[in-house]
Length: 106
Figure 1 (cartoon, rainbow, N blue to C red):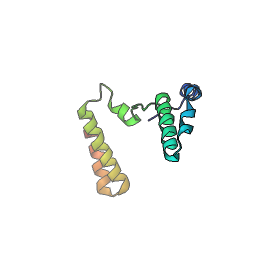
Figure 2 (spheres, helix red, strand yellow):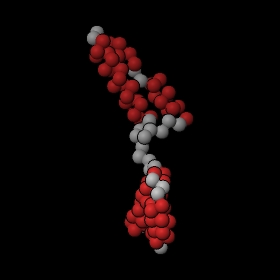
Figure 3 (cartoon, rainbow, N blue to C red):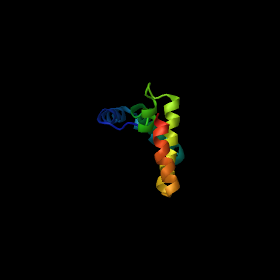
Figure 4 (cartoon, rainbow, N blue to C red):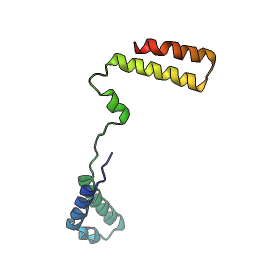
């Protein structure tokens, strides 16, 4: 994920002003000129907007120190039962979900 904030955008504008764009026009071949331009542009872009690893909400909630693997497994089981109950609200699924909901948590 890339962060496009004011600071990075300003940095991008300043670095673009300092790039020697004339080098792209020195080529007689259009393909070489395009490749030169793209290489310059991408290098400035990657400097200003680097890829950043960010955790999603789901990953953040599972990265809590108190959220043990057992709790994670129980939460997944409860979610599967809830999804099954909501997609097919039969009396059997309802009783399974409601009876086991408290057993999973305990």
